[in-house]
Image (tube, rainbow, N blue to C red):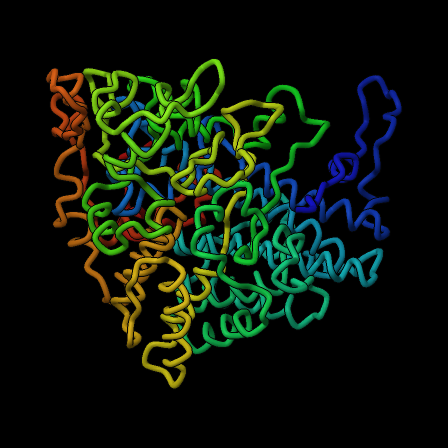
Length: 606
């Protein structure tokens, strides 16, 4: 894949604004704001800066996590926040158990990172159009500035969509605001969503927005494009209860012929380096191994350092290191919820999709290579018999404390594959996911934002009950056929679309938003999903009887956590937990922001 490498010098030019030094020493290499935004080179620098800031904020780490991934995935019903004990990765658990409040640091990071990225998109728009407070005409206009504005418009719309789905009534930041201006909450979520759709349409109809040039055009997947604008408009319309508009935009995306599902046996590569920019990708920002950032924190952050550890198994609890990741690098940040894993397994069986998401006990213990499977001198597989593997002391869970908040199913959809596993590759060679310059604890895989499978499923849902039901069924069937599950629907129903979407997009930041939307539409009961389903009755801990009970063969079993590690679930409260509260620090500075529902009346956090 041809990586889009952004010039660090171009970014530096944008951020450099002249100021007087106390010693009145002239600054070298600094461009005055008054002299900037005056030519195509400045427009390119501003656009590059927008993408750089998005990558460094929304798609990058804060500490050991990408805040967006934590907040949206751990709030869903099919993932458990894990770790070593109850207070390990505590900010993560608060979302899983609805114990967060407006002072939660991870929540604050998500909100501020969206807002910061919007600001940098607005720098492009407000300086190369008259969309600024004074209505001032730009100093420079050209075909390229129109393209830059179109890309920035879609980026801004996408970020507002994410804010609306998470906070319900975020402010609409439609230009660069001055310090003396008030920012207020939107009147409704619908107001934000309609604005998002209108902004996407404006970018599309401008004729300046880049379009993907066929299924093999990888470069277009790393920037705002016509296809991504259509996706965002269609998704916003679905959340705005406007399936007709969703059908229009998503139908145009599908009919463009620029996107296609990849082959079933390569499904797993959607989440690994080999699949970067494939035919299924609609938008995924490039994460590159930039020579200017080959040392220290810079390279690690670009590669989402330590997220690799979070999404790896609890390796200090294991008897040895499975060769897929190698080394003591896993912290057990998130676990597939056991009841959902059983449902997924019953539906998909040994499908390529299920295998790409998680392993069963037997697969994890015996169909992966552990330390004892590899000859240390030659690096070759020693071909242990199954009988020997069952008694092998260098596999399984050795710790007497087990693996906390985890059942006997082992997720690895987002794990960094240092050695892509044969159970997925069939023994073929595939590139590793880690960055060479930063070692095993880095992730070189692009950050997934939108892929074609979600577009197909959104379109299928939008077609239910319309004259386009046959087209919607065909879209659903494409996803089902590629999954390898064996189930192919013969009619288009909401239940089939909902079910398929949970399997197809598990752990991809979609489920929580969808549940809230469906709950608002009366299609699902959120109290039943979160409170009556039993998924939070106990915190599971998985053990290996080979070590804890001295049994002759490996056998995994779970027991509920007790004492300080027991469940602290606060229950999902309707009228509160559908959306997040605005961060406390933000509302202290701006009391015009009003949080959703019961959050608006909260006074318990000061």
